[in-house]
Length: 133
Image 1: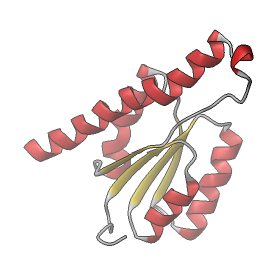
Image 2 (image 1 turned 120 degrees about the vertical axis):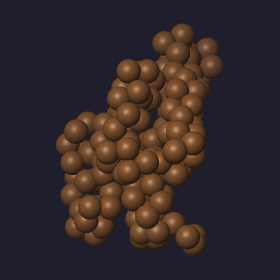
Image 3 (image 1 turned 90 degrees about the vertical axis):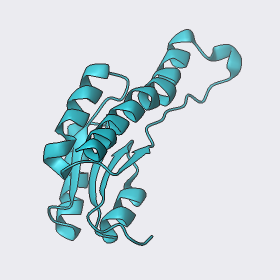
Image 4 (image 1 turned 180 degrees about the vertical axis):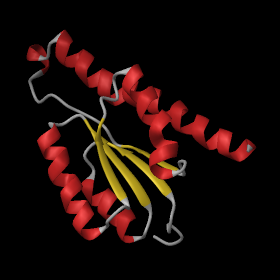
């Protein structure tokens, strides 16, 4: 990767290898996931040791429109804008088809499709507003 210095990157889903790579290339990164706060705190500590003030870690449930709106609303103050969205949040249920419930289906579709649907336009709105300014 070249030319990533000071690029502003938001990653949904716990994609640490990608976040590490972007941070090594001197991009500013916001990593989000819906895991327990203790896990996110550990991830934040790891990044602060290696890449101080370059990587932020926050909780985000991509299926919740209000959380997505709030998070993308804060991107400007956290990163100074947004250049790259890695829509990585995803889930799966490992069960035989005849045991796959409607609740399982709704959870998978909620994260995998609704999450990308909510995050993509939110990211584009930031980029388009910056381009117009």
